[in-house]
Image (cartoon, rainbow, N blue to C red):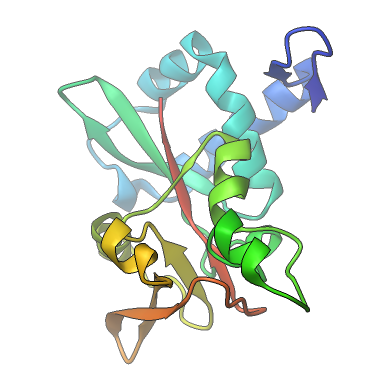
Length: 192
């Protein structure tokens, strides 16, 4: 991955560009149950037309997210990619919810926070609704949990929400936004 020093644009090398397309195609073809009505050629054409989004997908892949197509927005004609790793992406765990939570910790601060990491990657945290939709496509977070976008009224009171799947049921929980655990990360999505 390279960053242009003048423009600050995030660009992939030709090898990384080819590598991420190959990984996305293989995952797409292996998991047709997630997107039976779509064809890879159409998805690839969108990716080639919006190459800047490939950098974000590469970051999702690099951090263990295993991004895949999970839907299409007919209104905007965009494919929706989401982290489809079985567990919360390994390279995005042990983080608190946001910068305010990180700065509120006096000691034992985590390395980062979910909101800033997602923004730096060019992706968005899943909402609770998106998380529940993802769980209809498979069994995710059986041993881990994932921060999800927290409503402002909950965050204002110091809390944040996360979800997981236990006992064949998707649960939503709350925690102090400053908390972090080795088994909690976050899942993201991007539209292309």
